[in-house]
Image (cartoon, rainbow, N blue to C red; front, top):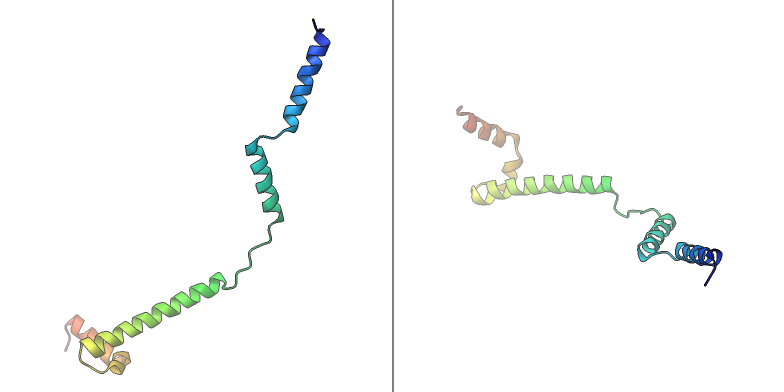
Length: 99
């Protein structure tokens, strides 16, 4: 029979060995933390503020192009007339039923 001290020593040894050995989850978390710590900050080639400006300019071009196609091709007018102030005043008068 083994003494109680030797049994306690074995239990303590197994506990310390278990504490040293990390589980797979803990290893993944440790690797993830280290990667996050060593990661360089993202440097964008095309910054967000520039993306917003490009999208707004693209929307404006699409609207102007649509108006010119609608007025010039579908409406049988000249496309350049769609950008004139007088044309829009006339359209607004028609919508408001003024003549």
